[in-house]
Length: 300
Ligand SMILES: [Zn+2]
Image (cartoon, rainbow, N blue to C red; front, side):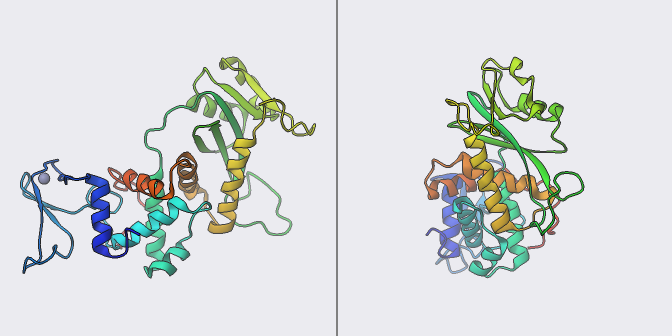
């Protein structure tokens, strides 16, 4: 693959970012050149460029989620590949084992990759939109633990799926009608049709939508009535749960939205080939210097 060695990984990232013509990430000038080693035989060891416009040096990392990291780009590349193509996600332990970077560095890589995968300009959903809510995350269940919501470390999450289109998820503090309906209003265009289960919290939302509100009656064993079903959103939630339980084991409430961004990204890019999906994630890393303080301090 593209990331066999560091030079190949850097040049792969440069190609994804700039195509044929490199541009200075600071001033945009394309009057730039690659720096060479002292004897001129190969590229300078850190793969730096020089910009004649602003007279500063840069690398392909500047202005991306890699910017303040010293982890080799071939490891970033591998982690992007695994996070973009593994149905259930990839654990930091696996990245650590495959690349040899420390476990902490592997955690750091994955946090940043999830951040890159977050949809920074989401468009509202329309058409047939299935909405459902569930509790995810927390530690694996132990015997006797069946409580949900308050008092447990599980987080309520709403998912909205446009059939044939994208999914959006939102962690919510509670699952009252007020909360659920406001999530729908924020994310779904009013010309849509809303499909939910029989949870009465959704009652009344139909009058705000041209297609109305249709409910699926699970208790009556009436799983599918024509096209009134919530199989799409339920399928999404079951893949999330398989990933969270099987790969990530324990996800805290503070981090859950980033894991959800990863599941959303894979779902929303499901029609792409693995390689294309990886490139889409890498491209999303551009312009996303991490702007949040993360628990794994940035010293890698
Ligand atoms: Zn410049």
